Image (cartoon, rainbow, N blue to C red; front, side):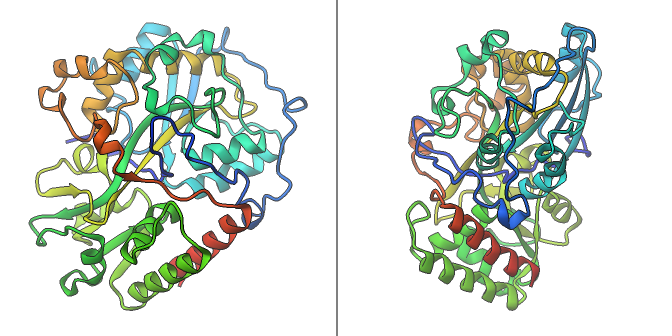
Length: 393
């Protein structure tokens, strides 16, 4: 069983698809005024950062739970290997549970050009785009991470929000679908089943990330999540409200839905693909792409302003883009691997992972995933507000 400290999280979770991410357009600062961060943009010419990497061989790293192999496992941890090879000590924290919650945690410092106490953190595409738009991130030096340029898969190389990967490096990607406990319930094959079956009433959870959950609500009513109207979104919100009011949904959760599955408080939920293998251990816990379709997303390593060890972080990024190290990581967390060449190396760590549909998605599968439509600033604020009202109700 994986390290019990980890519960991978992510909606992280914006959505990606296509030969590049150019289709993923965002209203970068869209939700800012709703979050109380209107006017939070930083002038990067004035907010400069000092790199102390040469004399301070350390990194403070914030990530989602369940996203790295056990940190303290002697002679098997990728982070331990990194520390041994580089002499850089990593203070690793799993304090990212939800994009918006983490944004709220660090925004007071970043909008004021102050240190967050972190050298690198991992957030989903749409949140990474927001932070780039705000000027809150440091530009990366690609000359210090040749493995990234050589081995980043084409699918992830050029998102519209960071076409040259100047500010972001993918950590892992994955899929959003359904997890159910096969010992406590019959198979749950669709989102409609999840939200309508009487035997599941009060025993399911949905994700707190608006894009994750509403993508499926839109699909359920026959709308295209990549091209929908305000009225279609409002209708999907009304439908969701009905399921909440009926008691079908126990609560909305971040990564902590894993704990509720383990305790038996719920028997099925909206879930991220890798969690079912690396946190829940597979077996009785089944993950499936719903009959309506599934969502694809990616999470990115980002260096915030005032972080003092950027060069050390670039060494970390370069390390994890070595195909052997990437393979070892993926053999543990079972997320979609962004590193070319890892599939050829993964057999030495887990022979059953060589052809895993979780780790190595073929082009045909990638093309069947869904995006969430690019939103204007007004839509971002309005849609998130409507979703928050349902969660808070």
